[in-house]
Image 1 (tube, rainbow, N blue to C red):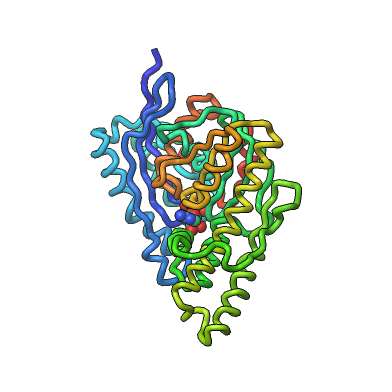
Image 2: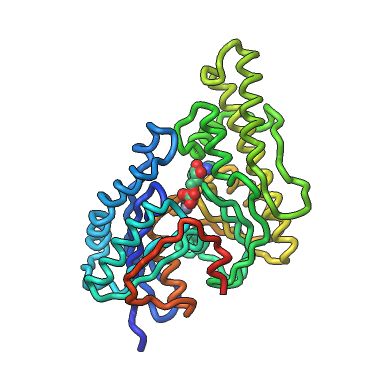
Length: 356
Ligand code: KG4
Ligand code: ZN
């Protein structure tokens, strides 16, 4: 009988160090045993964005203590680990090198195989960690800080990109607009919080490519529109954009969020219609956005479409999704872990490149 395989996963692609332990049974979905995360956001906030060199150095500081923490929580030791998985890309080269280096060193020391994982595949499969796990096939809306894609997903490694952003990602649109409104980096969550007390119809902001007929997105123009609108408001209030009254800022935030969410919802529904699929999976940091969830839930309920999300705390980067993606790849036979410890990383790595 096949035995349970214990997969240790390490995420270090950007500004979060994540480590997790997943058990992969011979049959059935892998199960998360423990995970630990350290977010560097506070450190980068002083600079208004991620400083790659600081990110790499901090990953070095955090990764082994987090690994100890995860093993202790799961009641395991390093000797119990069967496979060491790590994020191979895309992401910041130096940051990726830390996770890859540590994973391969651990693998070599333990004489255990290692496996490089695609970060976006981690996000894409993260809803399988939730109690309400999806089933294949489904349409996936992947909305992170660096990517915005609609995909048809027929199984592990069977991904067809239906549309994607031609410029800024949805998370980037949130973050850049948030910065214009004086909110701290990364801004998406803060903007959505501020939007709760604002009027989403207060300002008419563009819905880029809403009626383009295809499934592509474009968010680069939105931040300019937000900047112009904030400037007008500042003039009307006789102040600078940074000193706008809280109510005006809340209206600007709500209007910005409404523009982004409307486009994401409309294109997701079009993708479902085009594919004829009745299941939608939302993944990536922007998947934590409450307005997006509410509007997708309402629209999909009307159309008898099931929507799945990752657990809220697993929407943004984490080690659990990397361990899970590794386990699902191994389980599906898409990939084998090897004792080749001569690692490389792929800072730029389109998801299509790993399609079977
Ligand atoms: O997936 P993720 O952790 O990192 C990437 O792989 O890019 O996504 C981070 C992005 C950031 O742009 C962040 O502002 C955004 O997700 N984000 C949100 C929310 N929480 C995180 N955007 C809107 N509303 C939120 N609640
Ligand atoms: Zn991510």
